[in-house]
Structure formats: C-alpha cells, structure tokens
Image (cartoon, rainbow, N blue to C red; front, side, top):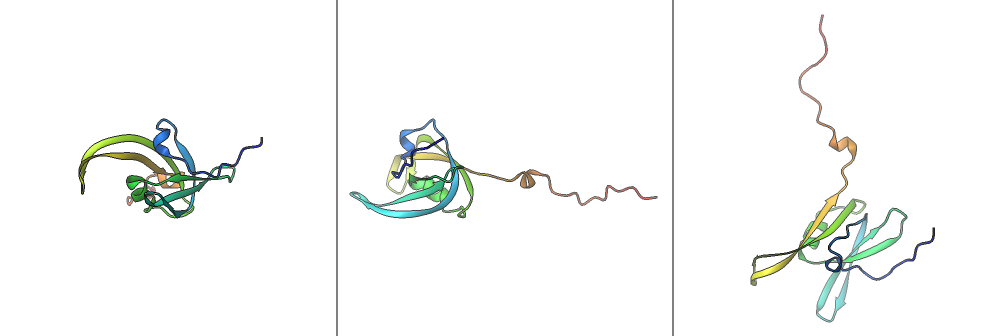
Length: 117
C-alpha cells in the first residue's frame, strides 16, 4: 500500500487522543516568528519519517533518550502548576520507550535452586 510522505511537523496539542509511535532519529532546531523551536524526528515502522514540535515537558523527556529508541508519545492536556513565571497552565505529555522482553524478565535469583545430593 502506498503512503503519503508528510514533511510538516505534527503539533501533539492538536491531537490529544492520538498516540504516535516511532523510532527516535534525532532533532533539529528551527527559528519561528516567536523564537527557536525544536522538532523531534522519528521514523515509523515503514521507515517513513515524521516530526513533532517540541514543548517544555516533551523536550525534557526526549533529551533523556538515545537515538534509536522506540518511543510512544501522547498529549495529555494541561495542568495548572507553579513555573518560574508564576502559576501557569503547562502542557503534559506521556513519553514511553519500548522495553524488550528480556528487560521485563525478573533478575536472576541469588539463591541456588539446584538440588544437592
């Protein structure tokens, strides 16, 4: 099936009920009318790239991830909280990274479970 390639960045805040999944490929900075802006870049399972406009909480979470990490993002709305500018509505995002099944397995036991005769 053919899929249209979209070169414009996605604004998560406009699609609060839609999760986005992809492999993190990097980020780039652009300059807008209001100043610098980060676009976080991903590739979907078909290898098609897409970008997502950054905002404070997304930028903080993405800065902790390595390129190549499989990520799932979903906008969660705003919460009113204290910022350096006073009480403000702050955009929230869920950022999840894929953990392999090997990482899900419990750690090996220190106890020796073997039978001794």
